[in-house]
Amino acid sequence: MNLRKLSVAVLCLAAIASTLAACSSGSNNAGPTTTTISATTTTDPVPTVAHPLDSSKFENTPCSSLTTAQVEALGVPAPTADNTPGAVGSACTWSAGGDSGILNAVAVTWDTSDSNGMQYAYQRKSKFKYWTTTSVDGYPAVLGDVLDERPSGTCAVNVGVSDHMLFIVHYYGRDEPQKSQSCQLVVQVAADVLKNLGG
Image 1 (cartoon, rainbow, N blue to C red):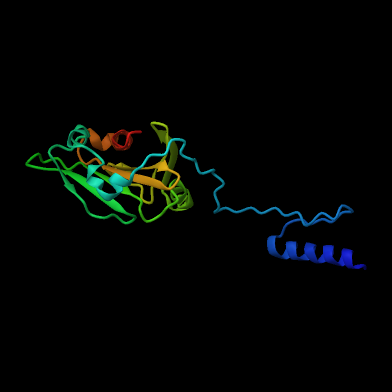
Image 2: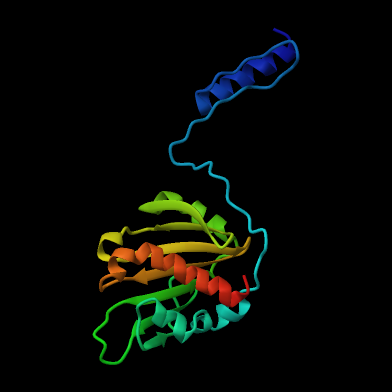
């Protein structure tokens, strides 16, 4: 066996051992041909943001992401804002205040822990319990979360404002009719944030 044929044979054996794929050699000196199937890797393309927005002002002051009037219109009367950092970045949660007895709430989190925007969400797709790609006012979005709490009135949406930044909104509908409309309302929250950013 000459040196060229020996090299091709070695390549074939290596490909079979590592990928259990077919390997063939021909007179055109083509390398090994492999086919890999993975049940855990998503091939969904990560959407890009055509018109990126500067979100730095809200990253630093997340409670400025929404106005009081916008939060009240979402079924959270006389809201009080809590600027407590979230698991992935700066965040603000608005809860109903006063003696309203309303338990609805809204939370906006800016993912300042990562610089990959929507790619971060897509990398974690296998961990999500629900996943629906959509868009909010032209910006790429995913309705989804690592827990599926929609039956109890909680819905989440991830929205990319640039290729390096996304924000996550949770709507907590504890009172009707908001409980049954939480996924529609969470999209409205996201649209309000984008409007306030100038989107």
